Length: 154
Image (cartoon, rainbow, N blue to C red; front, side, top):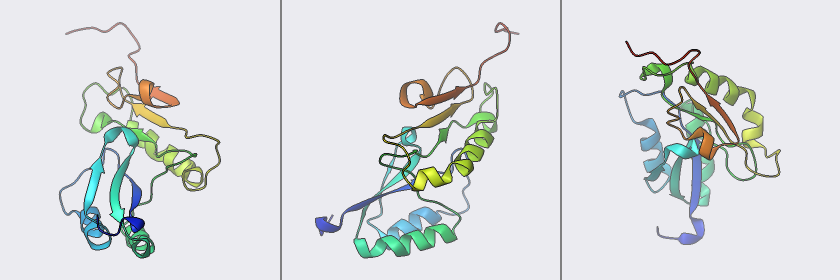
């Protein structure tokens, strides 16, 4: 990346389990304001955008919020909550992970942007004991769906 003194990394809250193919607005915004280089890593709860100059940060944030997106959390604060696909695509999901993650994100939005903790803190939501988002291994509060009875095979 040219001009390394301006190499900023941004975390954008990923729309967990929300998918569509109409357009790639985030990719277009990042191409416009940044390097266009991304790092998609599901365990972080965010989409990592690598390489922006200082003067491009505020215009990027402005455009991002007008597309209905938000910045993610990093540093010593609440990280962006993450969830699996849940009932939208998985037959094993025991509860609505998307709904739970969405409501907790809205409830704690202030803590995501304004550090209130002495160390990073993570919520992750897995719809079943398969634990696709590695909630047990990679979070402080794991919410994992379980079956009520013995597992029965039809």
